[in-house]
Length: 119
Image 1 (cartoon, helix red, strand yellow):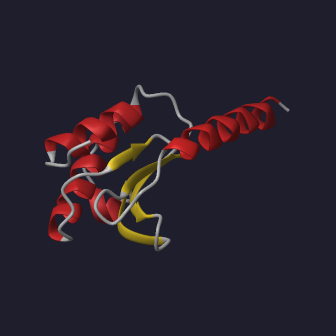
Image 2 (cartoon, one colour):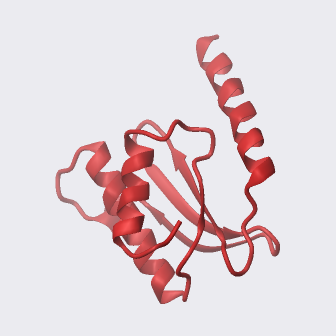
C-alpha cells in the first residue's frame, strides 16, 4: 500500500514538472529513470517523439568494475554526455522525472555536466 502511495505521489510530481519542460530540436530533454538496481538516461525530442540518445547502468555500457550506485549514476551521466556529443547535441533541458534532486539523480546530472552537456 505504501509503495502505491509513493508511486502516485511521484507521478503527480512528474506531470507537474512535465507541464513546464518540453524538449525541442535545439534543446532536447534529458530524462532520468531510477530503479532500485539501475539508472537510465534518455535524450528525447518531444516534438517528434523520438529518443535521440540513451544510456543505462548495464554492465555492457558502464563496465564491470565495482562501484556504488552514486558512482554508477555519475558514469551513466558521462556516458550519455559522450553519446550526445557524437550526435551533435550540446545543450539539454534536465527532467528529473519526479525524483528529488539529490543522490543518484544529482550525481547523474553532475556527470553529464562534466561530460560537456549544458543545462
